[in-house]
Length: 142
Image (cartoon, rainbow, N blue to C red; front, side, top):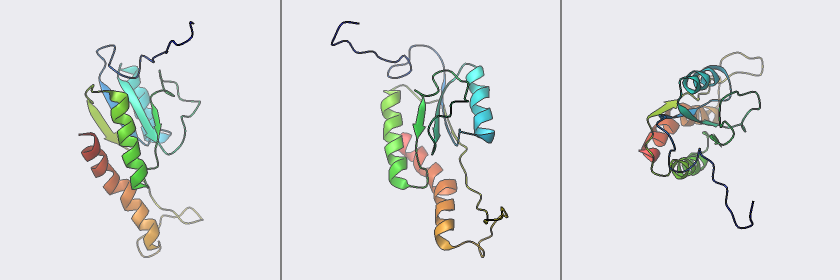
């Protein structure tokens, strides 16, 4: 390739096809992972978000390029992720947002914690991820 050329991914910038676009949080395992596989198989472009890097065992097209590593428990990182998402969409409309990420706090023994058993900082993190993050994500990318 001649020097000075820039390679542009087909999955960034203006959409090169008629696929609908879905953003899904909590995509690295479980229900989120299965949801991504389902929509990807149906022809959607799926942009995944999780606190982990893109897992190598994920079989969908353009996975690493269409993955955002975002810590949903940190409001500043959610804002950074929303800005990165808008940049990647480059004006192309988003068709669906699935706020799948969630925290269910557990003790060291694996038992679910209730509000009396967990400390306030833990419950602030739970509410940040489970309640405030979906609200802020919708507001940020609307």
